[in-house]
Length: 67
Image 1 (spheres, helix red, strand yellow):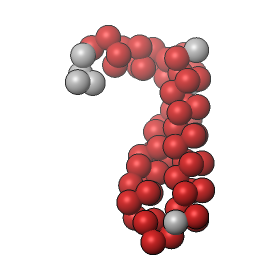
Image 2: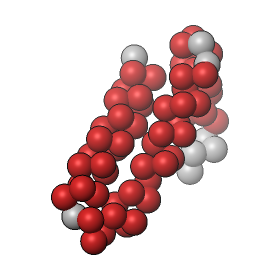
Image 3: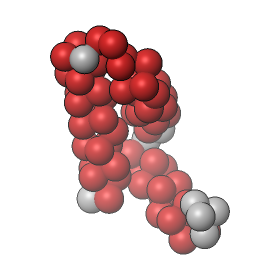
């Protein structure tokens, strides 16, 4: 379930930044600053079997390396 939430958040980031960049082209560079990272995260997750992606996410959350 947590993996689904993370993926949903990445998709929302991609969608909202694309929409905002179209609406405010003068601020496109600023708005799009996290778009590439979101796409990279989605691509990375997509390359892994679901169980492995979930395991790695849980391991990361438990490790404290995210501070």
